[in-house]
Image (tube, rainbow, N blue to C red; front, side, top):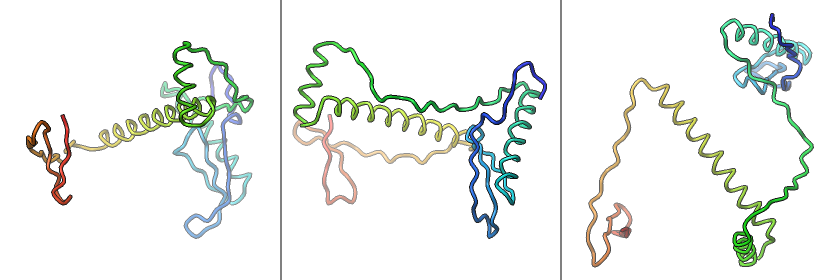
Length: 173
């Protein structure tokens, strides 16, 4: 690879495992930063070296095409898990009251809230990626229409009849 930057394929995250692939025993090398790449060989060393070669070849090809190579993912393992947080007094009081009502510590409540938020964000990002990938691969976008249900006025509530639910109705509005 010819570039002013130093490139070290050994910084990339390569995992090698032995497995049965279509009835044959091979070593499979995968590269975390290039998830679509898999190399197969008879030995661990060969699979690893094929992965290194693939990283270098991909970097050269990307450079020639003017694309940027994904950077190695460097995992920092020295997080303490401790965070100091400042918030308004009224918010602090509200969270303390909530944690007491749930009979859990304030710390556990905040961790639960952060976990929910992170999971929701991860779900949204994955869902949006899935939708855009799916739509991008379709030649035409045809969606199944949703059947419209007419609302029925019952007293002060509007009700939507639900099919196949023993004539139960759902209120809205």
